[in-house]
Image 1 (tube, rainbow, N blue to C red):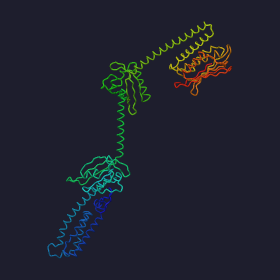
Image 2 (image 1 turned 120 degrees about the vertical axis):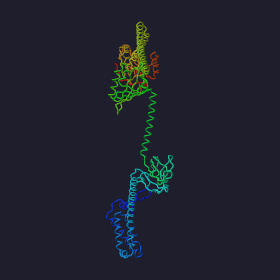
Image 3 (image 1 turned 90 degrees about the vertical axis):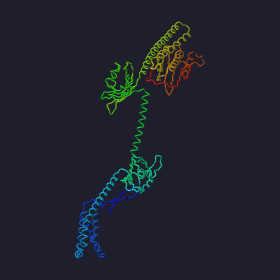
Image 4 (image 1 turned 135 degrees about the horizontal axis):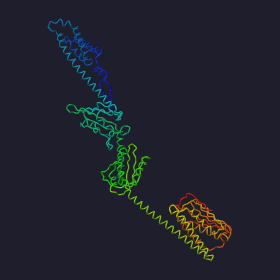
Length: 614
């Protein structure tokens, strides 16, 4: 009998196949008849030898085993032909003895009569045996093919020994057996099953062994399995007992599938779902904390749906969560209706995002302001968004706007009054100057007029600044040079202001007053009466310093010490106030230069353009 080797867990199981399978399944051919004839011929030869050794043996007793063999290996028809041929051969060989007998039925005739029904019974039995054997071979072949097709590790253990009967061809791939044999269930303890805490499985803990010993049915049990390469695979295991008609366990079947990829996908899906839940919870918390309502507009059906909070903003009950889009227009303020509809259409035409603030009237007639935001979906004709009641903010903004308008009016009125007051002071000083004959008194009044004029010019510049706080230093100096040059018409006053800085008024105005004092001093005292000359005012910002320079080409300061006047005292006080430094250089007959250095304040801004006055 030929068999084909079938791989199993560490051993070779043998499945009947090959020549016997072909003999059982195919129709008899010439070779079967020849083989059956050979069985019959061999039986006749044996019978002849026995006749010589022990005469008197029944003629056909040796022929029956040959018929059985022919029936099993060659089929019914070849066996019947061989039986007939053998019977004729026996009669031919022993016919003299049969004919010479005096009995009505001699032994040969009796043997022939018994041989015929015996052959019929043998041929019927061998026919049934062949059919059963053919069915068994086919069933075993189908089982082997089923095991070969299983996309995982599968095995059958025999009860009660635990011997491995059959296993699938993918067992090595799934379980990474290598050279480790699994002849019995006890050998499973050498494999890589792991408990959740990392402990290795004992042999009795594997599902197939539990099914074999206790009859447990295991369906889809997850098992961590450490392969020889160190990778821990996730297996899904099924196992169950096989029982005979009496209910006794005769075997156990187990299957294991590598679901590592699916387990990883499930893990990632669980993580993604956890993140989505966390995001949804945070979103819900943010929506609740932000007092936001949700809305959804179906553009194809022109139907609007919103949650209870959005409904409450419209003065609707919570259950009124949907309406036609056209019905929403009744809530818009009449002055806002067309503008809001146009803004929505324009926003959707430009892109997916929409944002607007709309004044509405609730069901109860209350005026409210709603901030509406939305985004059009890319895969559906829908717009999703949120809405928030911003009535209180709008009311605060309106109140603040009114307060700012009132403040602007008050400041304008105050500035106007201050300007008029300063002009009145200058006018009074001018009248006083005209009535004073004393030269020193006239000089003091003229200096006072210059100082008040400088303050008025700075104040006027501050009025025109964008924030009413900072001014451009160049503009103050230009205004100063435009008015102070009248103090000495014989002297040319040049203004070269190119600092290009916006300074806080608390710094810029003192700088303007310092420049006024220095220019006044130069125009009045640097030149002899009627003598021509030049006074230059320069301002530039470089290397983090604003440098203000007043230079003249007059007679210079006297060599002997002189008593400081009010102007000098004012300059020193203002210099300390703004944190600057002042240096004066003078040469007899070569003019005088006063240089003021001020570190650029952190609040300074570069002006958009510079100015020059001559």
